[in-house]
Image: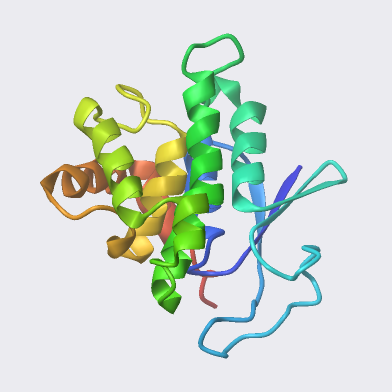
Length: 200
């Protein structure tokens, strides 16, 4: 049995979308988290060691961090076709995009938010926002998705950030059309309905 610890409008929302795309049966535990604006608090029910979300439990195993959970779930449900399998030529690009998001894109986004994105030591290590934008546009101009013709878990991870913060991805019609393709998916729409706990 899968159990997802989730807080509305957070990084765990993308995992809800992934679960819907996979058609996976999963118990959703809605929990509180500490928010950037000072609201919220650590939820004692949350097994994440830092009390963040997402956290996933599966048959006694705890998996944390969005990218690890994405890989775990997509590989657990290969029939959904959201992760190229070992031996597929797209497996390398798929893993590379996931690692690039966590290791480069998110840090550079945060550097921009706190005003240190132009620091030479950081740009040498992580590259610039312009470098990231060019890489995304190059992929989507060959698209229609980041791996080419097929929608994948990569599009959930990278697309989802722009539904929360559009400025995270490059401006322009190419990305706008990409986000519309992703946002119009029935699984995305259904996940939004489950993002908050059901009412009384």
